[in-house]
Length: 388
Image (tube, rainbow, N blue to C red; front, side):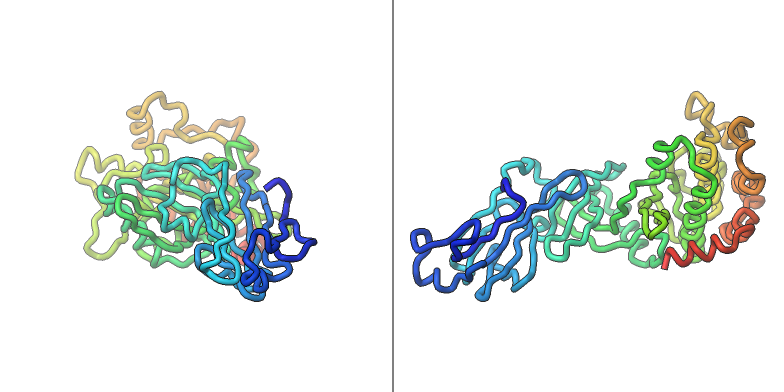
């Protein structure tokens, strides 16, 4: 389509006017003066999508399914457009720029259109998709070789299904298609926290406070629900700018390594990302050590350290082994050039979270009542209002 929109019908004023030369007279009488309209729109990632709006009295059909008067649908390449009856096929929409790669299965293509690539994780790609009927956008995670990762996949799905909190990503649906599994999740348009940090080197303290308070709310909720995330890191913290003041809303994602705790549960598995891993998780590799939900608090400490200073607490380590030894000792360095600009309350909170002994480490509940947050109660009220 070269123009932004096209009208189609039997009126001579339509961009595409249907006459008895192209259409049988018995069908032409059932076609409205303006039967449907095609509109082109550019969405995120520069991708162009084509909407069909049904303006007819007798119906417009896409692949045999009626669109409905004044309803809109998104067209996909090879869609068949019928007028007045499902059997009167008049047009076929072909997207000449469509990628040869079929990322979605044919069944999923009926309902979803891929808009752009969002990222690649340990278990597969994540793409932004739009529902062709509701126009809602989702982050669609595709897990290849699903049979080999069945435990991890359904662990994440089962956890997401039971969670309902404004700081936890919302689970939409799961689609099993033989070799691959697709998981549709709430889409956050602001990228992840690591991208935000990289774009600014380090975040202003007030911005850190806004983000970290919500992050802690989410972790506190997880712990109250008996869930340990075990892989908290900036890449798993999603953001979206909302409201008149362009404030940041935060949601935790990626529960593939999470664990549901109960009275008979012992955490003995070494997992997660080393840079954000608590000392007691590293000890699991060398000895029979049991850890608790406090491993998430250590990860929060590393995240806040990075947000405030723009540096990782163990960035000077030259190898993974050296970093593991430094983590076990709690041997991090707060460079004066960075930390002299940061408030004493924020510095104290970081130290409280990065305690090597988990028994000495602050809890998620106590973080909420730390002076760094409590000196501004109006801020807490505003965050809660934003999340509503």
